[in-house]
Length: 119
Image (cartoon, rainbow, N blue to C red; front, side):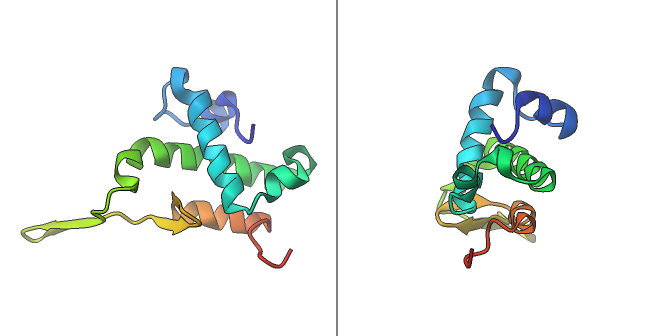
């Protein structure tokens, strides 16, 4: 696993996902993170990466799990924004290869060097 339940609660400080659903949420986020890195994490082996890369990937996995928990119902919704009077609400997500995520997560993964298309 890219992020264990212990990492999620202690190192990352996550509180959004209940302990009963945490393993499943982290595994789902792990698939997204690997897809966003073009399968290179599984290809190289997580344990073969540098400690710096592992830390960034673990953090990105926790962020993605929280993102899916918090906005999962809205991710595939065709309505991306709405306006009521002078108030406008817009989802600020990005999509890469069909995976909805945040720019913060993409930035973490780019810092690992595993999102470069020229590898």
